[in-house]
Length: 584
Image (cartoon, rainbow, N blue to C red; front, side, top):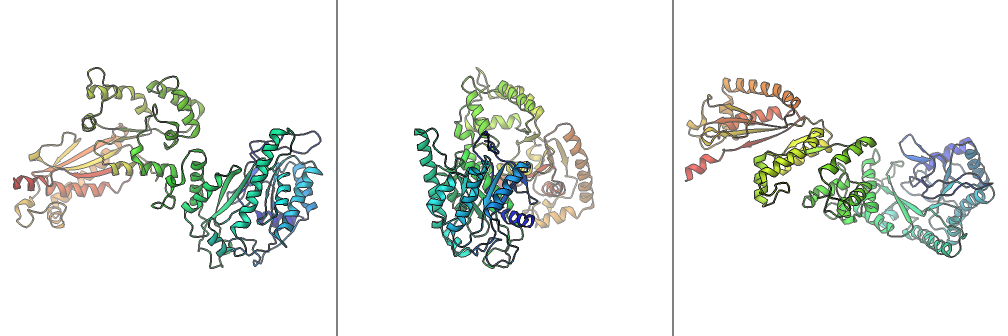
């Protein structure tokens, strides 16, 4: 018996469509067990998959030769079969020893679908009627089984599942020529009819028997075929339109039959893709997303680097920022980091007052009290930049008061948000950032999970004759170096050109200056970070801002870019002004 148990439990581990029960059945006098609404007892296999403590096959013999299945007919592996009595006794003995709280039962197909289905039904029927087992039972219905057997199974099982396996029928015929979608969807339809009929009967008759009260589920293999995530999610979405479909499970393809050339040459299962599909599935079920919003013809596969919700947000910047005092519930659900519970709390809170700074403080205190882990990203800009942005968009600052001055509004906003800035995990000064540069900094923090020092460096070349940059923290004058302007062939070129760079850096003083400058800046950076500085502008100037300053700014930028603990950008403010002036 132990050898049979080992073989059949090992064969059953690849079926992932086993999860919490989704049904409640309280303990009854004279009965064994109960099925709690929050699920059955679980354990974790060595590969990390969540499994029921008794997850077993009736037999791993199978008449089919599916390319992706470990139990295929042509595989030479240990085989075993439990009799109905052995399976029933094993379940009861395991329960009495407190090993399990439920049963997940599946089987290979022997002789024909009805023969196998009949034996499965006999097993769960004996558990219910003979041994009065009241625990959770999840049974896999056999594709191609008759409606009579499916109807009988629904009277004793809490949940029934029929695995689709492959999301495309043409692909299914390639990998499993003996199967088709009709044999899969027919039992699904029988289960749906049984559940709906039972619900109607229980409205009229209080003690009418329940039919598969936890509904049905299915499973699809991910990565065994060329089907895209769009194909998979469209099928899942269609299945969820059915009133009795509770879960669609996704199983990353495990190359158990590597010798079959119909299968992809994978060395490891695509677990990241599997996880992204579960996240997308969650968006379909609870966040009111449509499939075409998550994946479409332009993006047929999910981004493996970021979750689907964040991916949608990055593709739709026009939807952000979101005003939590005005956004509807559906839009709140689309904000990365806001879940269903949080969105409902925001909507409920707005019924009494607007959400402002005071409410934000209360929310943070509540999060601290509950032990919830969260991070705060604080974006800011200099007053000059903010005033310019308000004027360009002709927007009114909500805190500007009666006189309507943007400056006063910004001052009041900084005062009210001081508590938030002090608590922020990440501070980013976007004064000198382009949109793509800000996106890169956010990616560094939240996608690449790199250590972030809350400092962004701008290396700026300029010409003294056009004025020193007003926002520069450090200014260096390189006019002591030989000027390429007086070399006829170099005059029209800039410090971005190889010839000018070589001319400037061929000077010993230039190389020595660069080394000392780099050393000083690298010394200053951690000290600036420690003091809370978030923006460092380094200005390097020459006469016209075209040759020497551009060359040294490029060299300093390259030297500092080797350290990815902070963000860095380069700008040549006056590189083209000389040509414009002469043209006039």
